[in-house]
Length: 305
Image (cartoon, rainbow, N blue to C red):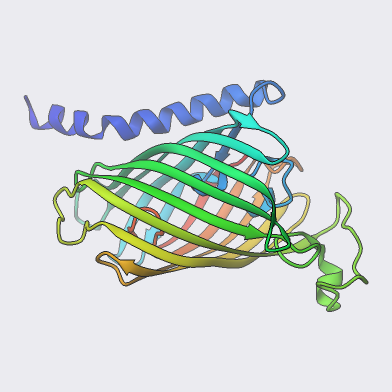
């Protein structure tokens, strides 16, 4: 078998995931009322349907050009997660998903190469109801991740608790009320559809992973358990949103003692549906689920529904 054929077969699984996601996205746009498909950037965001107050704070699928500040490279990056609302009741939902990330990079004087190829699939199960006296969302998401760069395979569970406090935490408030200090106050009023809003985001999370194949980096690819939080803020208008999110996890076991990843993002949408737009972002730190370290500044075409 030729070297080219070998590389083609090696990259095929992730390419298939990427192509399938965009095909399903185009189909879902014409059948939005009949199919509960959810396109996001990260798998843990598929739990929020489009009518959820937290939808505007979810990540978007993206493809675009970025600058990798760690190794001084220009890259083309694709990242998406596609979920399907298999079961949805007032208190329980189940959302199977598939996700993928492909990054090709080129340094000055060097040929283009693929630096990241990851695909995963699983299902997010959520409970919506009171926890510790607060309306909450509890998410338990088992998944299987395939890293085609280091040939590792990972079986893992991601879980999170997202509490809600009316016009205070994980619930939108008018931006004018936010700046007037009316957050968490009865003086604030329910925002209208066209209002610019601010949402303070917070959740706690636990991750555990077990490698079925440690691949080419057995020292780094150790079974792990991590406990952490995600916090940030999203400002949203009818045709834009700006957000900052920081995800920190403390390693209870495994190679990494902690992971810290933050994303500063500004998106501007074509029309007021918030489905397709242009995004500028800065992503820095070690990703929570994949463990990949990045420092990327990029301009992307994004899609979310």
